[in-house]
Image (tube, rainbow, N blue to C red; front, side, top):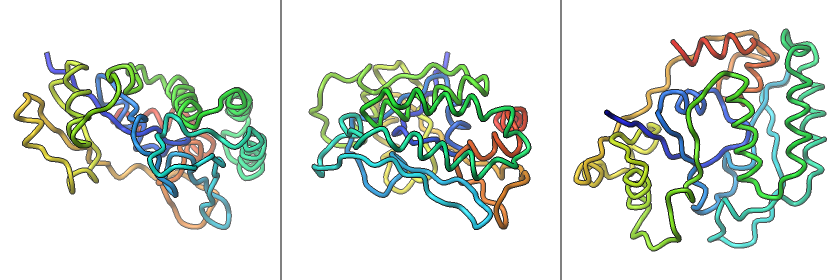
Length: 233
């Protein structure tokens, strides 16, 4: 029996493609014991407005270039109220605003209890998965790893895959530029690539259309049934 897994860093309120990957695998693993990168998706994402996409950014304490995602703390919890207020204002005329806004509010209330960006990201992702009916088992990489000592990033991924009893490592297309497929195959693990489809358009608040914004945009503008259908084509 083949077991397909994906191993990806946690992102803040990710876009629909992130959940598409989760929905396509037998197990999803957050790769948060690696270096925290600035100006990335770890602590920020975009929502659509009438002026175009804008960033929602969680302020974090980044003090060391070798700092891990899992050990990166947020500055405070004031961002929770601010981000929710922006979402509420920007989407108040969205078709599914009344259906989902109270639930989204509860997510931001729950987020106030967390100190680390990794825990915040995982919480939001779990909430959105539950809303969409995605039942893929998810773990953090610490579930499979005991400390460091890996020769490189590829070895880390291979070890996680082996300990997860995976036969297929499912990766985003960007990794084609650096992933050493041969080393996976030498250890009996196949590599498959995610090819993002052209997701269906829906009425957005902004000029033009951009699917590369937080999935919250699609939920509020098009509804959970629409998103579910896009993830189960």
